[in-house]
Image 1 (cartoon, one colour):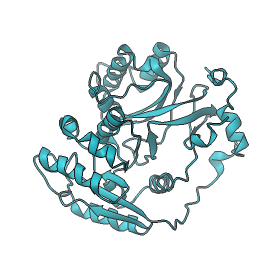
Image 2: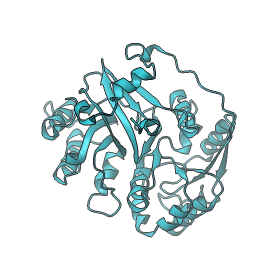
Image 3: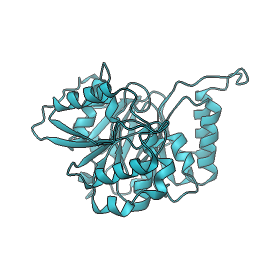
Length: 337
């Protein structure tokens, strides 16, 4: 399936890539060269979901980022705990407000878990709109990413949480891509995508954790994205549960409004004795058959070791060629075509 014809007189994504001298057959052979940045970044981190289980990991994260000229301000309640949460609802709401008012232009959660869904209706979205930040996070933070877009129209980013930078071994690609995106220097993300459908299109990139997206159905916190490029990941969900959540998006008309679906990691799932061959590839086959949409796999994003930083709510380009996929992140430079 190829959507190139829908671009009209616009330059196709593949042509755009060729203009940028990105060679499809060589892109995956080029070693990534991390850039030394001179500009400082300022990040504010808080715990709006689960509590920080090991404060030493947070300390390591702050130290690791400092080496790359990233100053991290830790919210005063970031190490709080109330049951499974990073503080009670009032304290976590106050932390979000403090982050919005702080001088740092990037805001990240310490971790995911659970907790944002129960306070979405109490967040002061107008305060956030008056104090625009670049919010970056994933997993439970998907609820915040999408609610922010739905309530204010503001884009944000999915990517690592703060504690990801405090692991004993920090994934280099996750770290480097985060810095590259935050410095505004990532234009094209290429990744291996064997067996993906042919696609060459533009659309609004959005998505995140599938379970969180499904949980927002029917609420004012799920943005109504038309001509979207929807990316998905999840962890610890049986394949039949993944398919059931996808059927919810299908029957609600969400998938019909998309131009393509991009699949990240679906990890740590088990098969039951009743599956009898029903596995994740069958879910993907069903998805293709019932949506007619191009499905692109292999996105290095999710609960695995690697998670790239991606914009939510911004126009991007998507193309596949010879078992490779290309996301043109910095698409606004080409709007005049």
